[in-house]
Image 1 (cartoon, rainbow, N blue to C red):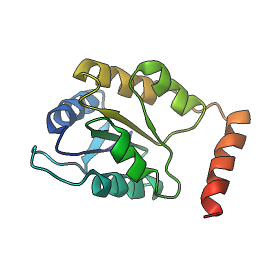
Image 2 (cartoon, rainbow, N blue to C red; image 1 turned 120 degrees about the vertical axis):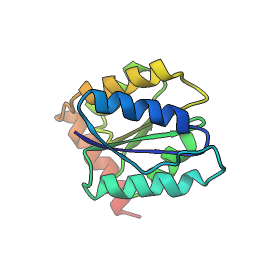
Image 3 (spheres, rainbow, N blue to C red; image 1 turned 90 degrees about the horizontal axis):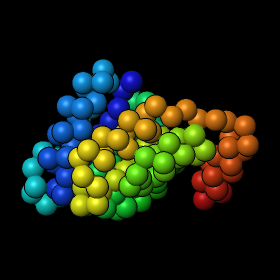
Length: 147
């Protein structure tokens, strides 16, 4: 699976650990984030990852900032993106199974590295269930189309 990962200045260490983890699982990881703690603007990174995922350049995306919220808000402004903040594995599974989220996000100031690995693993192992959930995902896309 090809995964785009993006992070801001709050999260370079977590990103580096997750890249190693994901590559160890056999995934191809493309880094759109920063590698230092020098201040940067998370909306730019969220948008860049969102555009790439929406364009089909990767199977999914992982975003990390201090809380996961700001960077996911930016990604969600891109048409076709369904980014969800996850702080534990149950939500990570459900956002894929029910919402077909194509990006997950979390905060390096909220979860530790082992929890982050568990979240990513749960998300990647989950499968979209379709059916009534597809109807709801279609409704989300219809909202975008009305903008």
